[in-house]
Image (cartoon, rainbow, N blue to C red; front, side, top):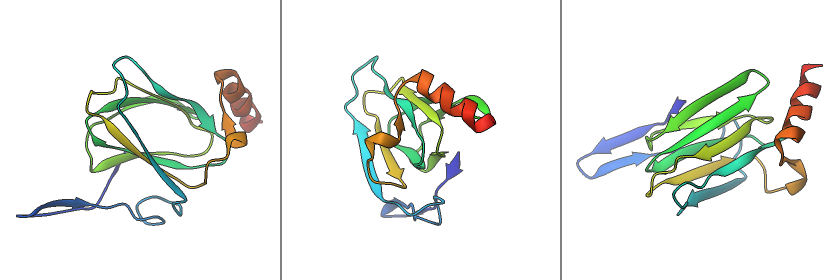
Length: 131
């Protein structure tokens, strides 16, 4: 988890993300996930080459992550914290609160050929990384 710079005064708060500073890459794409129905999940893939940074800017979500170093789960529920997903990180987002909005910063434009869309593909990729 990474805490983000937040400035607060009587007018409210401002939180920022700077490419190359708060995230270790230039930001090529930004998208957000919202209106996820109760019980639904998102993600269930990894990317061979892209780095991503996720923030729950509203509500909460649980994220299962797996990479060459193992598995972990993070709970995103603060709009001043995010989690970094390096290339080769399997991710599954689930347990969305009804008001959840997750913003994703990506180091690359969308390239479908770089995605590992099945867990089996991901396992093969990880196996190759360990050699």
